[in-house]
Image (cartoon, rainbow, N blue to C red):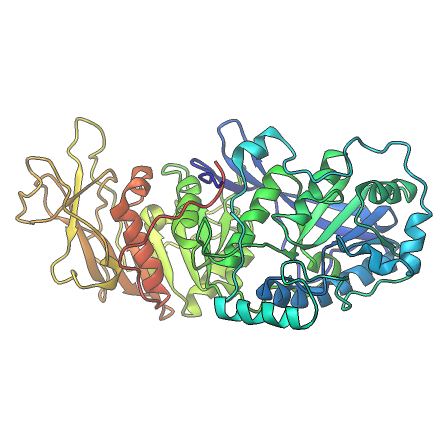
Length: 556
């Protein structure tokens, strides 16, 4: 059973690296960037990057359940994409001195005559064999069990293809429910390797060879990779320095199952879960160079959320919103400001291949090279969505080596921020927003239900449908030429009424949506969540869902 994900959570990078080539290391070493997630006392989730150098001679690569076939046809297709990259990683690590353990569960008998299997049987049983090392470990801690897994499982096959695939398996003499017989032959098993699916044998090999570090690759992350006797939980529980190679795994999950997101988003969710509760992850490019593997079927547009402000807590609300509304169809990455250096953003390289940039930043002046990355993104003509303090995102006095972008608002958002009405608190009247004249048919507004105002003055401006919000109303007039106003806002009968949401074509020619809304309470408001959902789809020139359904995606 799935449970709500991160009711109040923050994803906060404290250090990072983004590599196109392996980090420098000695011939028998690998330099790695381990990514994990950690909750602080307030329940916030920090993204932690830790650099480690491993001696390959003290390292094992465990290949989990990379079977020759599977009952899920799409799983077969993805395994065939994974296998060549896994083989390359195995070869590289073996050449550096690492050992390789092939673990095709329930298929070990196939290899009875293989020297790698015979070598396994010659390994003496370890004196320090952990109790219950031979069992499936469903949870590593009470915290993980309480959280629950973020995805339910299932398959993602086309039903007609799935039926024909099972007929094919029967014709091959295979059991369609468990058709595997061996490891896929794309991954070479050398005589110096080991073959076992047994927890005691696996542990004994590690101890016999003085192995402290373990890289685990294979499938499926929410099942065998995490739970098998040689899997992540058992390795982490008993003190091995274990990592999952996150681009060389896959989940067993179908979008028809909770939390009803894209298959690859389900894979992302289980990786995030493992990083928080079980062990860190790395990517294969840290060993092989190039780029991490991305499945050919992963055609999700890539959204990068650039977040650097504290007043409105969008480091909490935006990730929660993304899981509820965007993981259904999009790949989402986060570029957060550093917890100690507010002007430094981590993982900003993600915008190089972003399809949409969502900005929630307040008066930050990043290093000049980071500002250039953002300028390059804008000038490429790709879309931008800005909320609340994005109107003064990069407007401040920069320290040496850093850069302001005071013209970001007029050039990219089409706005003109001049402060706000002080209408917060019981002594001040609230803000009301309404659909601007002529904007009712705009696709961004599809499904946005306005008109819940209850104040005596809620229709004093003549509007028939207004919406009460918590956000202080920004002073934004006059806007840049070419803006298309979608929402107007007011505070009691003050004049002038101010634009609260609009679209624009930014300086690079891409679509922009901006709203001055974005207070934490707004993210509990179905109208605001639908407005922001519509803005993302519109900015990417995709049909806007008329009424997006909430999606529960993961743990507390």
